[in-house]
Image 1: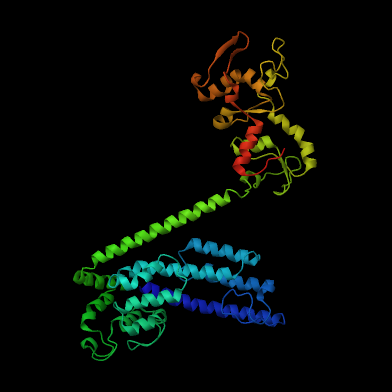
Image 2: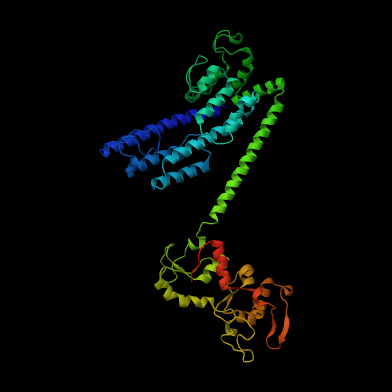
Length: 476
């Protein structure tokens, strides 16, 4: 509880300093540029009812955003946001986007307020949850507000103060907690007084006056400003260096023992679990909708964004205008090679393409059917395609990660058994005859696969698979 008070007061103090700094920037901008910048009550305001919007002055607008960024990312004090790294990273990105005029700077104010409200709700939930057991019917609305970032931060603080009114704090202390002043003989705002009291003894005196002292003469048998007898044991806990959280815990334990409120606490916790599950289901539904929407949006795959230099001139190609080898692009997607072969211009592609295609020669080598013709079996009479489409070896692509291609399916069928023995079986270190159904052909050609199409992938099918995965059209 004390931590919430201190952090709230520190946040108010720092925010006032930031507002003053922003006002100085705006005034200096108006003086230096012979124009009037209207007043504003927000840190990143861009315009007002009169005067030139500061967003139209790039230098001063950047100074304003840097002041906001420095307030949160360069703070040397332990503040409410210090441990919330994800929020600080997001805020840093938002400030950078605003400097580039990619984000409305008012969104920064909204995001800070949202995160601070969430921090407040989380801390109140953990510190004051058990204070809510006394009157659940009248406090359920406050309880549910803690499950989401409150839209009305001040209203939530007043609701929590109402809970404290029926707890340990006196009405005067509650008014101080709300910033109303007066009470316990000390007067003023409790968070601000705690922040100003640097020494532990002075902070203890602030807590005594606010939460333990009698608020009027004769109250509870004690004189004005003195600690009543039934409050003394709790105040003694603070004097023994126990925290306010421990004091509240003790008060509630004794109250629960007298009223049997533990059962109510259990029901409230169950209600909290239900709300959490409902929120988790809602977030899951939103996530699924977002994924479904993104699946229809065109995305640039990583291998076409993180490009290597041009294969001919060595210059870095533009990600918006370049040419690439489609075979290499498919091999990169299948993790066979690290980078595609790209050209920065049609001229470089014309110069380098012919030389590059030699790296994708037929895996049959000297036994390629384009070099060795069988007079007894002319090309194409067995029904196999002898066209210009190349074929990838499935096992080499999927398991061995070798860029094995054949010039045609007929060439693959003729030389697959030799390739399998030299590459597949050698790599696997064992014969795997269950995967192939062999039959005798003749003494010269040996064995053939029963269905060569099951062991290879045509180039057109590989291109279609690449396009389905990346949602990008691969033109060749």
